[in-house]
Image (cartoon, rainbow, N blue to C red; front, side, top):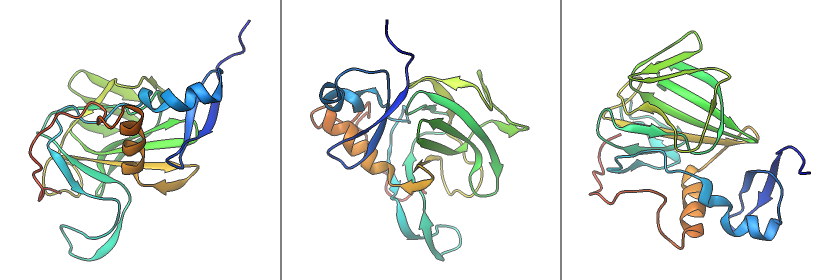
Length: 196
């Protein structure tokens, strides 16, 4: 009889620890683990701002950008990167409408979503999520919007590991490497470059 599924951190060549469910050999999991990750935007149009220090597009002051910006058409579906639990529904002037999903030691943050967010509940079209709700990798969790501090339709996708901010681009590179260099579910489109 197999023990109940537990999250097992696994060190990968990319230097990241991955939350895995269940057992099995670490070597076999290492080769295929990142295949479970899902690119969070269905209608990818380009990367518009990287992780790290940058000039803020609205104020012009230099500050840390704790995520990557992924441009997409207004209303495009936003997908959960990994299986997890909604741990926070956000509504503020920076992130706008957003969600935090916890997956083991990881928290993935989705900002500038369309719809409404209040009282621990997020709604956008047919999507309705509440704090404590389980979501699966690839599930539609929202739609691209322009809420909060933004100059164009995009997803700000942030990630923390054990409370520390990490560059989500590292996660995408690990996912692509597990697929033999193929980007995870990204549709090729022109890079729009200037949207933020």
